[in-house]
Length: 436
Image (cartoon, rainbow, N blue to C red; front, side, top):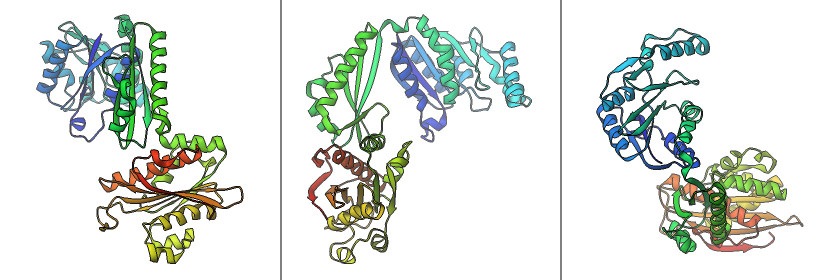
């Protein structure tokens, strides 16, 4: 069974809102063996929506549509569906009663006259109850394809799909082919390096299929298994996923939705260690990433955002002569920052980062994208060992700061695992400094 997904809305086409509905639906459909062949995003225009509906019904068994079922003048999906079906819109009296009841019982107010349109459906179609909002869904058929139209509000769409539509798809034979997926997240190697490392695992004629996706520096290895039996699909997926993890080694930090910062926090918890941060060019991004993880208060002492030289001296006790002789963006200063974070908080580990994020401020000697990171560790004697490294980053200010923050977290993770830092593709001139 093959499906197509259509998302409706000017805000999606213009990039004002991210289409999360299509991604979620694809994942849910894969779980029940329905393969998605295409995602399309369409503006709020009757002709365009009609054209896409007709085209998708020619190539798919199931067409899932979200959006455009509201009561306003730019909610045009029901009208476009009627045009595609070649019929008129009619009022569904029973559904109108349900919409009115939702207003009076749950919203505790009278239904505006404008909302009557939400009880309109193309002749011959069925309406789908919406227990979470005012917009009912619609089920119709065209050219042998089954069409399901759902509200665009993610919570309403997801509930309607799980409660009303998924059971019907299963009855239609959705599980004729079992599809299982997993994502292995890596940071520290480029996509081409990842592909070269994986080698034959990425052959397009194998099952499970292995591919890569890059987003904000995270290179994710996607694994998709398609088999006739659930057990076989699960076993083959796990076997290939483990093979990917073994080949990629320590750059792998988690599967599926696991973030780099969550992995770091969990490892700190496991070892009973405390982290402190000293940030300059990242302006507190590392601290924000760490504290976004629930329970991070047990492993994060806090951080210093020392943007100026004066703050570096006052809060981290960076020697004035280092700043004068080497400049704020230097190995010597980042080492003092990382060690200062440890000494001033009593933490076990300290991250220091200083650099030039741009777009201005660069020089021939220190161009934009020059970032020094330092990871300090307190020894049993109370002295510190620090590893420093130079990062050569490129892109926008936002991109440079993001990559720098992630490099520091991955660097800390490597230190926690006693792994070498040279698995970070951006890091060079690495140097270890013993007790200081």
